[in-house]
Length: 361
Image (tube, rainbow, N blue to C red; front, side):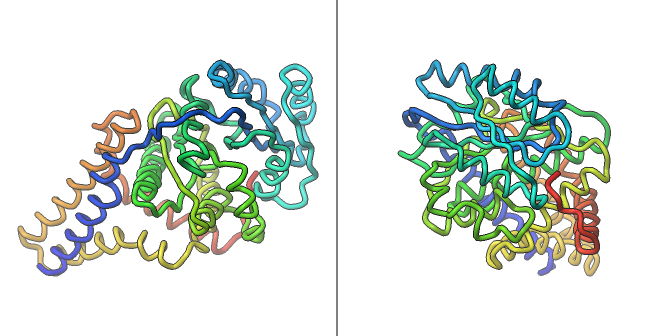
């Protein structure tokens, strides 16, 4: 029985401290004036077919920000593309005034492209996103920028999968939403460690203080996470805005192998997280192992009650987060599918450990 009670205690502590009430009462929409200028940075590698759609989807957010008094400059980096990306970006440079950086690709790492883009930033604040992302509302930029410099140095935004169908999409959505919940909870507790390069903002001063990506340039992945952790170590103030209008919708791989390759990049980055962060993130897994051991060792009503209570608590806090993020809270039932996501992560870790498949694009 002690095993089950210990597992329940761990899950209760984690849910209430990192996933629960502390997150829900945290003020995610930091009040404050908007900066007078910002840059939207997007990195491209062989994305000719997406550029026109991205420009069209981004324009309402640019118009809204400029109407609010923010001068916006879009910086697009062509990172060694071999298709028509260079020509498509140059056309937007002429027509829309984008700043376009053409860069030879010396290594398959987004760090290289992002550093080139940041070197061309003109605004006081940079908002980074991906070419396959769509802002969910015209207020996206202003909501991501509100309070910059005065109240925060880094803002963690959310980018969840867009529309899809099938079991693959259900698991991708669950994995993304649970990761987002962890990211928001960590920010609320002052322990930010997880960022999303598809939707993230930071001051140019903070970028310079960290030294860009130079301290972890040898790690192919982890562009946003490792940089964010360095910013926190230097005293950077981190905020988050999980509301729907501050999110972007992203295109996720349509095959299991494509998703596996994407996830392998994330796993390879987590291997160089600080030991204290890794230990903290392992606590829910430890709690689940204790609950399972308790049920196996002593299959009593008490053990089953502890396991059921832990699952219910996690589902409730997940539903609260989904509501906060503008998603249907009743979708919290999908937490029952987490074992399938765990198997997928194990597969990604094993493939990453036995093959080199962590290139950005």
